[in-house]
Length: 462
Image 1 (cartoon, rainbow, N blue to C red):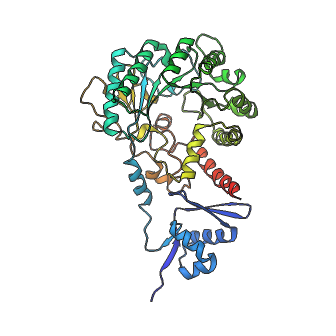
Image 2: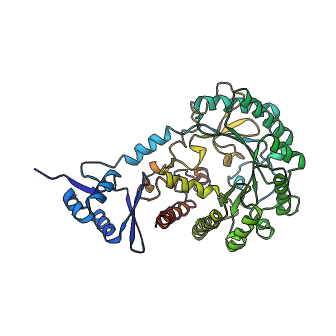
Image 3: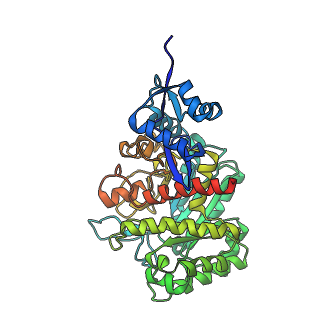
């Protein structure tokens, strides 16, 4: 009787460190640690395309290890075809993309002129003139989103309404109106009870009145600061020639005084990387465990052109900061998404809502897929006034819904294929002219973070 033969899975990735090999299934994110000689056996078998019987595997690896590797599909029968595995995983995850996020752009104007602003990424054919959202448009947008969320959302997942810009507090009147309207819609059952309101601001226009209002209405605030004044003001500029740091810091302190859930949106500029230790101390002192923190890697922009070294250094900075932050009970959102993905073994379809989880409403009421395109209004194919408009049926996401490493040929051999999410599709489109290209700014973050998590987990278990 012919013996069944087994092979090493194409999704089996091997990492080595100090005499230990980690075997990772790049789709399921299962990881197991084995002695180096057994790891080298796996590597050589995969490299040479060898097959062996169960007895041969058991003799070298031991019965228990062989059965674990077989159960976790790191080893499999030669009959098993893996060609469709990533596509099937992607198809399953794609069906689970709920429409739970609204970006309500209260204005596309700003009182800052930050050198790295993503809104300066698109090339404009006509002179840009900013505008503000009217009360009528805001209320129509909320009603439209509520109906779409009820139809395509997932009640088990938090629904998030981002009051965004530009600088949204340039339109204070509609900001107040929108918050009150959202609260009423939640009370009336038109929006889910787990609806979260988020204000994203540069902080310069926050007053005592606004701070009290957001506190009373449980509005979370994301405020942009890139470190102390000497670092922040290199890239963040106010149009009034005042220190951007002083303006933002004053607003942040008002929020803290009123016990607002205020987090910091922190862009990793080259100036930040020059002053890593100072920046980490600043965050511990000024932010601490009082609010969230989210690091941003520089986006596509006509003025700023980071090199590959910057992206690797930014990825390493996030890790080094995290090591310190976890000892100080500080939560950094970007790396924690990766930590959760790895520890829970929950593959990521996309790192961005552009694949079908969000709609963006511009100040004029047009509905689009991403705020990166708000100035040229590219990929904005509907209007809130149109009662029959449905972004799913009208194809808003058709060009974006499959933008995931799981469907990308170039990503198939990458260990981080189900850990990455693919970065920023809009940024890639703006930088290269093709959304299907790889987000080279994001690759180092995913790959470096994945390998660090593998060995950090091993160290924790020793």
